[in-house]
View: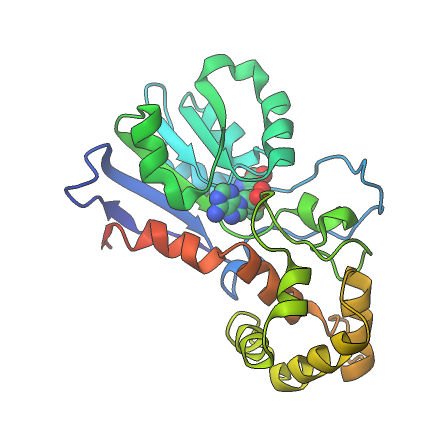
Length: 270
Ligand SMILES: C[S@@+](CC[C@H](N)C(=O)[O-])C[C@H]1O[C@@H](n2cnc3c(N)ncnc32)[C@H](O)[C@@H]1O
């Protein structure tokens, strides 16, 4: 759904006008925020693909137009940004993923200086705006979660269906999922599987991870995914490692911290 909260900035955010913020949440929070497609291949040459959701609703809500300055905090493949640009707005597209910025730069080059791809995190949007001199943003869009491209590139390490290094970092910095799985204590792992993955077998999986890593360190997505499948068995179509992978991705990328950095700074007016 598209949340239709109207956000008014606190006085210390003079750079941001009363602003419409569109946040896309799936039925189960951030995890379903973007359309997920089945992987096409395991090749690192995988072309960028992401199907933007709720395009018409985003445009209706944010009302982009010539002379308006907007920020897309989750640029991804640039689909939403393209719709805002087509309506005449100027858009700063923030993404911490270099692949996303490179692809969007190519896709949106025709809009000239009305589009700029910005390396950064949306949680730092206030600083980005100050440093870069964006005066009075008229709208911010956040399409939270992972892109189809990230899921479909095995070498990014997000997928339980494709083998790759157990990485999951959207940007290039910070600890990888493998570091969490190999170094964190059992209680910490259990907590994130439970809190971020809503995994009801959190306790069992955390205990298994800790005993398994004594034998061999976790390095590949397939090790973790196949091990969890063996541990829990398979019922239905959903892979039994789905929730653990979600929890690790959210932790590695501090997804809750990023969201609260944006939402908690502003006074919400509904
Ligand atoms: C669901 S996709 C966005 C898709 C995009 N709306 C489109 O139409 O193609 C989410 C994107 O946000 C990026 N992302 C996630 N968290 C971020 C953050 N805190 N700061 C900046 N980019 C982030 C991811 O790297 C990914 O490219």
